[in-house]
Length: 427
Ligand code: PMP
Image (cartoon, rainbow, N blue to C red; front, top):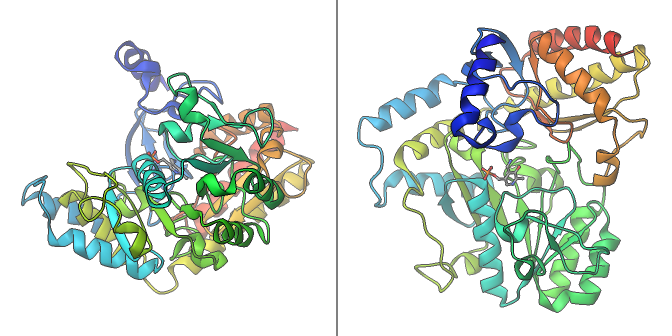
């Protein structure tokens, strides 16, 4: 680990905390973040040459595994023709048509450069479209770092939101109402009090930022009903779940149609891309057809579009998702069986190719409070044990794990062998 240590010390001199996104700093689990030099298929290698089986997969987008040859070639080919034009290209049309075909509720699509931009823009659009200011989000869901979304609940569900970060004005946060995930009654209560002022509900249809928490039966259906009753828009933030929990995202998996959808990194095959889209009558409200302003110099970047299209083409392969889901379930079931064997209290959640492991005796974790009450100390020990064994999990107990096409049965078996050794050490 010597090189990672040297790099981390050097990084901290010119980069705040040594990283360009906080969770990478290993603050939650302690220790030195591994500086990565390359990745391929299910693997990543650090600066000291150690190989890891990677279950972060760039925080989700690598459905096909790292360094996919077709995506790489598409990037090389596109870059021969120039890196950015700031003018429309045919690739953007093909991308919008492809997204719209795979996620039919996205009748129109606007490209952006990150998940944060997608959710921020969708919120502005929903406010502009409805003429209302308030928005509803859920405790434990993360939607990027736009001001309106960096908000936590006040002292009760019906109180105004308070900023969860300095720098967010209180009078921005007060328009964000935060309620409990998987609790439709808390949503109804807040709509009873403020329904006619609520522009939208934004939700991760499978929560992936408080570990992995799928929706309980009736929750997403309930959100749809409440929105219809009050004329509010339902936004699915599918930055993690899009093309992951099903080819058509969570909306296909659970059969609920949102008004707007946000997609992120996954549609860029690893390049910095995102998009938002949805009902045609809503999308026509953005500039230049409508009054709601939204823009981006690099949006629809030709190299990023080429990478994304190469990814989109491959995820349409017959049987792809069934195989990945089977391996994800085998990984979670294997972990559970090993924990039971070693007398470790563990609970697992799975949604398609996303999984979560919780060190708790709660049989099924369904909300934020349960997720944060898990045994963090035990997770941190497990984390470092697995890292030592060559398995790279997300460096915090509140993050979901991701399985790709490249994680075949052999890779799952190797991961479980490592887990067996680490659970034995935890006893
Ligand atoms: N929404 C969700 C559900 C996310 O998980 C994330 C980031 N992981 C974002 C939005 C923000 O995306 P980005 O980091 O690309 O801005």
